[in-house]
Length: 218
Image (cartoon, rainbow, N blue to C red; front, side, top):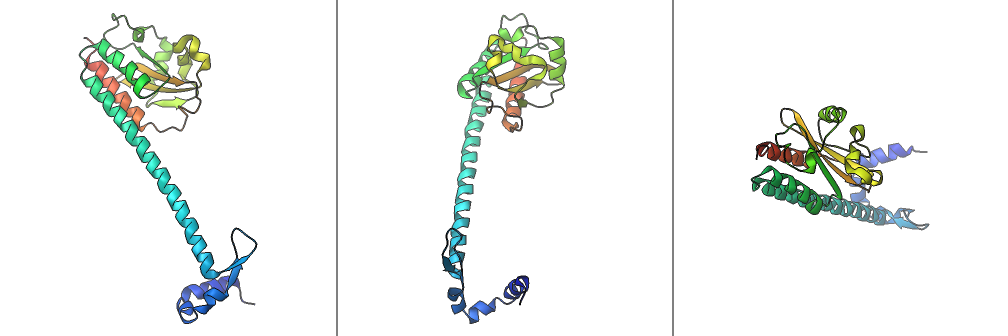
């Protein structure tokens, strides 16, 4: 009895076999992939191609969906940049950050804390006291961090809402040194998950950090 691998190898090396014996393609009957009956080899090939096309169409649909989502987020980041550029005061920047995060990015809960920036005489929630241990922990967060917990109980910045919040994105604000943090939160544990991409979060962090430094004395 011939070994199956030998037969397969011979057919691959002699593709002209099916040219010279085309009728064999229709005479060979093999099991249908989704039933109990048999089909010809050519019909099976057609079914295989259809399945591949279905898979490719699904993948293309997914890629289009990702592209549309990224385009949407990119537009929001651009709008944030434009809104920050037209502000002339620190209060205007702070209000813009809060409004954009809540109403354009659709983040349910947003809080901002600043400690290394001139403007602490401004009566704004962003200048509420921050524990030294929290400042030091945030200083060691190199990039935006997403997950179900925050460093050293920063979720307590949300007060009585803290127990109901299940996911967070911490954006450390800095230039040469860390001077604050933007904390985003949601009761949905899947909104900010540990392996979430931070490409746009990093750009938001850079925009906000630059805008705050530019207006810290205004």
